[in-house]
Structure formats: C-alpha cells, structure tokens
Image (cartoon, rainbow, N blue to C red; front, side, top):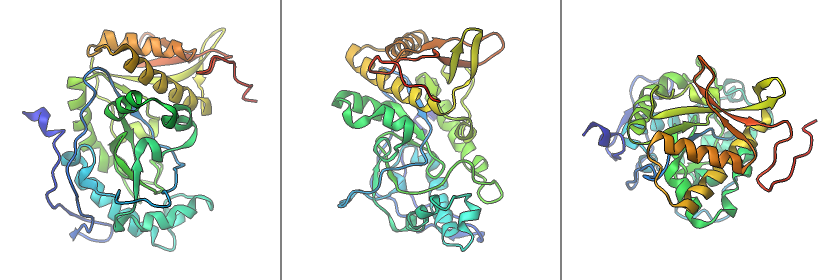
Length: 321
C-alpha cells in the first residue's frame, strides 16, 4: 500500500552530497528501526521547535543520534543525513556565525553543531526543547498516560531533522528555519518529503498545525478535511487582534498540555473531524481560550485569547507590559 511506505523505516545506506561536493558518502550511520504511528484515538499535532534546548545529562548513556531510527526515515532519512553533514561542515568554517545568522550568544552552540557527525547524545524531542511553549507544556509534570499520548500524537518541525516524533532522540544543535536559502535552502530540501508525509497523515488522522509560519513553509499542510491550521490571536472588543506574538507560544503550550490530559482522561476515540474539533474546543476552554472557526474567505482556525486570559491554573496573568 502506498500509505504504509510513509511510515516504514529503512536502514539502507544512502549517499548524500554535502556542500562543495557533487558526490560524497554520509558518515552518519543508522542504528535500529522505529516508526511513528499516530495515536489512533486522536489528532496529530505539529509543533514548532525552540531555539533554546536542554543540555545533555552528565551521563548520556547509549542514547546517540541515529537518523535511521527517527520517524519517517524511509522518506526523510536522506535529507537528514545530508543536513547533518552540511551543518557540521558549515559550523567549522571561520564565518559560521554569519552564515547561520547567529548572535554572539548563540555562537556558543557551534561546537555542538560541529559534533553532529560524531553521533552525539540525544534527548527525546519533548524533553530537549525548552523555551516558552515547552515550559508551558511542562512534559516532566504530566502523568505517564499523557506523556505517552504526546509521544504518539506530536510531531516537532525541526530545521535540522525535519518532522520528528515527540519521543525521537534530538541532539543539541543550533539551526533555525531562518537560515538564508543561499546557505541552506531548507524549503527546497524539506518540502518534497514532508509534503508526502503530511499527505499520508491527513488520510488517516486529523492533522492540527500549530507551527510558526517559518517552519510551516518547510512542509505546507495539505488542504482538505484531514487537516487544519491553528493560530493564536487576542480577542478585543472590536474583534480579533493581531497574532499575539510571544504569548502565542505560552497559549500553544498550555493548550497542548490540556489536550493530552483531556484525551487520556476521556479515553474516547476521536478519529473524525467533528470529534476532533469538539476535543480541541473543550481543551481550549480548559485553559481559558476560545476555538474560533475561520471567517469567510479564511482558512485558519483561531485560538482566541481574552484580553485577560486565564492560565492553566485558572488565575489571570500579569500584564505583559
């Protein structure tokens, strides 16, 4: 079946071409086999990554980067191996900071990039990423069933590895979707494979896209009943305001957390679009926001944030100043 091919994992050797070469073998080995299977009881959630990441533990053990063990390796594995090689090479150049558009502080992550070819330690994606969204999601404080639901339901859109499952191993690194195309054309590299992956997912689950625009460009959501895009906007007395910027991430994190808790508490099957929309609406209300259908001529659903939104704990936040 065509659909099955999107989820199978291959450990076949693949030749890739890093910068400056028309034909070079990737030194990154594959190890083991795994596959991402969407939770059959709920939607698939697409999240953006974070610029900030949790450091490796003092004793990382045997958990090491192995591209062919990540989700969708049959479709995305070649691009992953290529980017691992190219980012490591770029990061070894004297002008690496300028090429990758890094601040002086961010340049401290260049050694991690240079080590990508040496099978560095990994952490599960939902543990590796920190920052506003992932701090609000707070995986560490969730009960086991909710964590397992997230690992089956969440895909994180990375620039380095493409779409990875919430439980996939991600190394410490620094690469954003804003890298200039003349340095790394991430849209050209990721879009074909990720378009195929998302089309397959939308055939069997409702795909809910919470990615930022820069990361959504790496793999646009297919049109149709099997997918929907969610944005965060502030509710004002005269209607919807602009996207809420920094607060957008916190709302998304709390919303996904509520979704995992509600889905595992209800233990109900929500395969069809109407059932998914009901689950999304209930989870939005749990964190004090409103799920709003697209306006006429629009395609994006909205998480509407009141001017004084409540937090997951039910208290009004301080003014954002």
